[in-house]
Length: 237
Image (cartoon, rainbow, N blue to C red; front, side):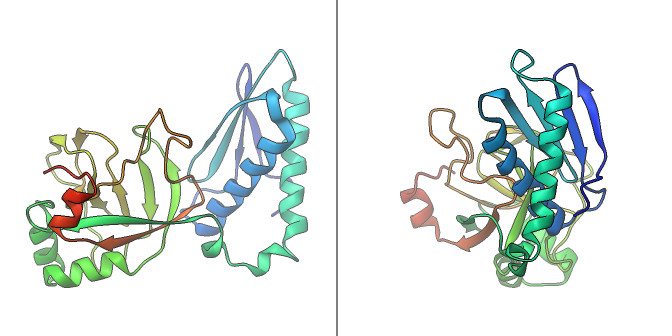
């Protein structure tokens, strides 16, 4: 990781550092590691960190620091990534971050697009479900709505384009696929992804600490549960 990555002013009290322009597990891990380093080094000078697929927005407290000092701290964080290559880089990017398992009730009852997705892929429903569970997905970004984690990458056999006409209401907990990404809708909202199941695990709870079960850089796996367990875990149909 070269420390000369571009850092730009993004506002009167924010800087943004660009890691790359491609979907990459390695870049996601680097962003997560940089964010963690900045949380520790900036302490109360930090207002927020907003990671995305290939960038990290750093919002700071202008009464306590300025963009010159924050830029220095970002460079130091990037240099720490360089130093860690010989030690921590023996751990593959796909193995970094927390591993979170999410239960899913896969069915045509809970996933209205499951059959059409299977037909499109020329697979059985059981094969689609099995393939969806086989991968450890990287949390590349959180956005669109609080707790909406963009996960990738979906096996190309079950990748599917967004719906031509988005739904006005997608239920809370809907597990969905769009292109090579998958996600869980944290709340009822409009959406155009292909729905294949429901997850009873809350993806955003402002009263909880932490408020979300996953963070950028984490890994997510899905495990199939039946209707009875889904209801017992608090799921709603």
